[in-house]
Image (cartoon, rainbow, N blue to C red; front, side):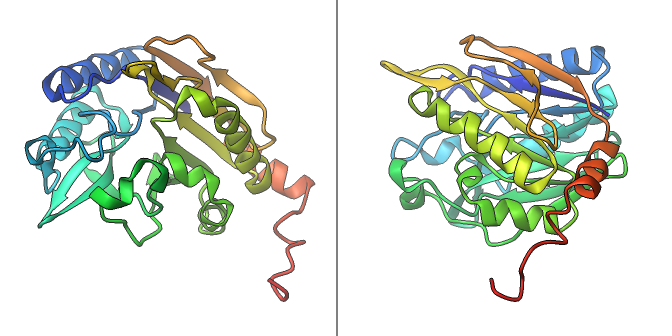
Length: 262
């Protein structure tokens, strides 16, 4: 399976620009032969909390669902749609949609752990469900950004059968070391692939997203790495799903767990 992470420089509050830009990059991913294209967190209007205005939210996800469905079918590519601001009823959610090659929206995930440091929980409601899905027959899961700091949530994904965990993010440059360490640690301890796709560029005066999008194998080896280049780009890697079972058969972490005492 060929995975493409699309590292975007999201322009705050400029939805039309960001939708058009995402489409252009997904087209490039399809032309590069990718089976799956992955967008970052909050790619439609940027990561906004107190500055979020009602008009910026996608009501019931209608626009994003239609957008992803159309281009997934047009380019015949699976899309892990990062996340966008969605208004459901009177509440706002940080929501990801996943589209398969036929353009079907096969999964929807609301971020469950909200980033208190940035006041996310004051503006958004939290999801309450683990979400897994299949892309081309491969069991996959998704978390969003801050959630990589919660090893128990990632472990539940592994226990649910996920072989690939997608992590769309808008992670700041000031904590880039944590980003890299945490994603590699989650890959190693769960013996699964991590596809961690971040934003890049300046998001406020002297505030930058970290870039450093990565595709990591079940042993923690980085297969593709955007590094610290503060620019839009794609990272690509062919992954061998047998690496998951090989890692788990060689080092039997899951069999050696002591679920009787924790």
